[in-house]
Length: 517
Ligand code: ME8
Image (cartoon, rainbow, N blue to C red; front, top):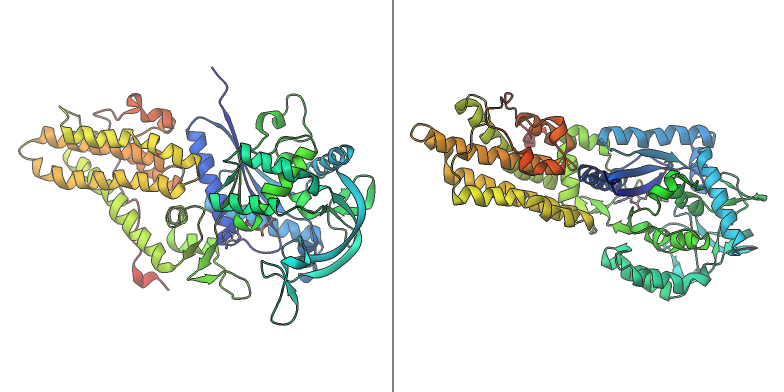
C-alpha cells in the first residue's frame, strides 16, 4: 500500500505570561479542526502546539509573580495543556521552548546560519517593546497620550543599547519576494499577503537576534554572554518538533516543510518574513503556507486585561458546552476576518443552527425510526427523484467541503454542511413520513432510510468540528467506530437495513435565556 501523504500543521506557541483566553483557544481550535479533517481523509497528520517560555516578557511576569522563571513557566504552561483537554484538541505534540530538545535545535540552527555567513556582531541602539518582544524603528512609533512612545500595536517601547548579533535580513528582500511570487498560496488571506509584500518591498533592515541585558533564553553558541532573540528561539519550535537537527531517517525528513503555520494577524511578519529568511539562510526549506486569521473582540470591545473583558474559554465551555463553542467559533466569522463575540450571537447559533436545524433533523428522524420501524434501519425501496436529489446532495458534500478546508474557509465548509441540513429538513416536511405510516409504510421506510443515510454523511463530515456530538450521532445511526472515515462515505459504508439502533437522545440542548446570567 502507498504511504499516506503527510500533513504537518502548527499553532503559534503561546507566551506563558498569562492565562489562556479565547484568542488562543481559537487559533488552536482551527488547527484541530483541520488536523481532524485531514486524519479522517487518510493523511498522516502531525499537529503541533505548545508554549513560548523564554524572553524578557515571561521573565518579567515570573518576577511580578514572585516566582523563579522555571517554576512560573511550569505552572502557566500547564494551563495551556489544560485548555487543550477541555477543548478536546487532538495535537500530536506539545512543545515547550524550555525543553532540552529545543535548545539543541536552536543552537544548531544558529550555527548553520552563522556558518553560512549571515550573522555579524554589532551594537543595537533602538526601541524595543517587551510586550510585543519586537524591535521598532523610530518612524514606526507614535507619541502616546502620556508623552511616551508607543508601537503600532499600542504597546510601550523602551530604549535599548547593548552588544548584539545581527542577522543580515537586508540581503533577503529579493529572495523573499521570489518566494511570495512563486507560491501565491504562501500567505493567506490575500489582505495579509499584500501587507507582507509591501512591508518587504519597503526595504528590510538587519535584525538584532541576540540580547545581553537578561539571561532567560537559549545561549548563543560560542558566546554565552548573549541569549538568542526570543522570536528566533520561538519560531525554531516548528523544526524542533519535526526532529531537527535532521537524521537520515528521522521525522524531519518526513514532516518538514510544514504544510501550514496557523497564526493570528499580529504575528504574520514574524512567520512570513523573518522565519523563511532564517530557514533559507540555514539552507533549509521554508514552510508551505502561513494563514493569519483575524481578531476577536468582546461585545464590540478590544479584548484586554486592562479592560477586564478577557473571555475565558473554560467558562464558555462550561456555560454553553464544548461542541456549541467549537461550532460557534468556526461558523460565526468568515475565517480570516475579525469577529465579535457576543452572548446573543452565541445563543442565536446554538438555538438556531444547532438545536432547530441539525438537532431537530436528527431528533425527528431517529424518533420516527424508533417508534415506527421497530428501532431498526428501514429499507430503501424504489427511490424517487426527491430521494435521489437529497442523496446526491449528501454524496456531494465531501467534494464541496474539502476545497474549503484546503483554503481554511471553515465557515464555508460549515455552510455547505448546513445547506444539506436545510435540504433534509425541507424533504422531511415535504415527504411527511408520519402521514405515510398507515397507508404506505414501505414508502415511509424509504423516506426514513434516505434521511438516516443523509444524517450519516452529515455526522461523518461534522466530526472535525464537533467531535462529541458527531460521535453520539454516529452511535445513534449505528455506524461502527471503524466506519467513520471519509472513505466510508461511499456506498460500501451505507447503512444496512435491519440493523438495530439505540434509543435516540437529544443532540444539542437549547439555551434558555433565563440561564444566561
Ligand atoms: O505572539 N483574537 O504569543 P501570544 C484572535 N509567543 N486571536 C488571538 C487574540 C484575539 N483577540 N489574541 C491572541 C505570541 N490571539 C508568540 C508566538 S509563535 C512561534 C510565537 C492568538 O501568546 C493569535 O493566534 O501573544 C495570536 O497570533 C496569538 O494568540 C498570540 O499569542
